Image: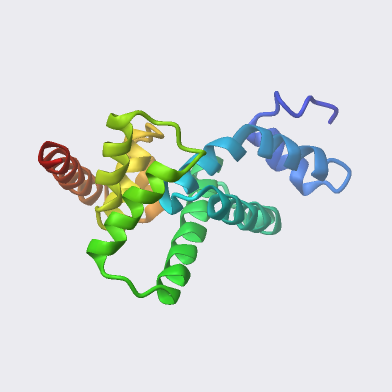
Length: 186
């Protein structure tokens, strides 16, 4: 299996990961294909670059250790997103336990961090959208980000989050209404 890491299909990556002589090449192919998308997904959840890097590192380690257990019942990328999502949620819960600020202060802090973040170069509209997303409940943030930014289908989001398509559509609708109200008010 002497295929360029940049042109390997998901099937070739999975086969390569099961063979010791191609495991490293296959994992490099997986990273080159999915690392940026996973980072952006994680970054939208944890917001800070250094935190996103840490969560991505943990995600890649879990993927490497667990890929032999991937059964193929879903697309590879939905399995990867599930791991990234779970790692992000775990990180946020751990961070929340160490911080005891009110929700109002947390939202204000989020806006200030977005404005000060050198890795975020968005204009005023993007900053307002990010701030609006930050005030949503965590599940609505996840659904909105995966649907809006990652352009994932409700079916794929359902596989990642283990929630029905109907519930996801409702979450997205509620998130969109809250974001619209926030943008109009600010």
